[in-house]
Image 1 (cartoon, rainbow, N blue to C red):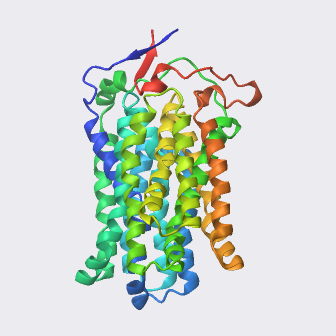
Image 2: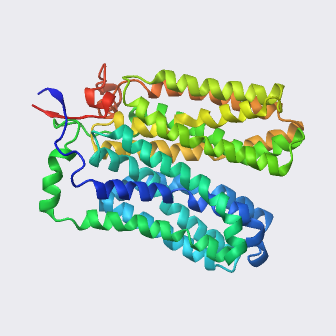
Length: 431
């Protein structure tokens, strides 16, 4: 058996509805996180959220993404990836509507968690669906949904305040459920396809390799641990910046409005990385240098903020906003370093479940260090240490090996180089 690149004829035939579904899902994966914080004061006028409640609300996204991200592969195996994604998006829409109608702190928190649970499952289910339907276009499709995720994080804060002032916060929050409902529609079409229609797609959906592969446990694979640690370190850095950059800038004399604009710039720059990084990653056998470059951007930005925080602030924020490019890179590697959609689902769940769980402690630790020391030196030192871990784990995560060849533990067989499909995003089949 040999593996050779295959370019399927009419590569988009039958897959446009799937692509539309992936993009709509990506636009729904962050709205529950980003839609409330800008109008939290308005919400608290109607729903008596305490400071502790607000803290729980801030921690809920990472906790929900960790717990339900870890559960998503099992749900996908039992129900199928597509029905599981339908349920996840419906759950997110239901949570959005219910929390907009909540009148008690408990109700608001519970239904927020319901919405986030659906989105946490969606985070994990999307990469294996890209692997299943677009093994020949992993880079392009990953770029499309990564950009969608960036938009879903950046757009709600921009419109939340004017929308709440115009129609009320309940309508402004509940309106985002429409995105979840729209995301369900294409996947209902996919699920409802007849067996004959799906069989016509089979040549396009051929997995990277058709030979038998041992089943294994993803936690035994060094590749999975390297990706999870990389994901965790990057996510922790991003959440710490979101939580504390305005305070850091305020301590050096930057006004609240200006600090908010710098944070918006940090968020917007994620669009650039989301678009470009997957397209580059599929064209090289080992994108380790991208991981090192992103780590270096973090280092320069943090040292700059420590030594000369306001001159030139635009440079530090630009570097800081570009550095999280390791996030779309890891999402791309989930598809490139697995042979099957089942392998991609297992890897995606492990990486994101463990990654978000580890990252949850980041903002809390940063705040405690700031409070204990009275300045930001210790916090930035912690961030630099995390970046060092990110760089090492990231280089290991980029190695051209396949998950299914390594997840059997010591007896697993590691390949010296990934097949052509994992480097280029082209599908391959046995000849």
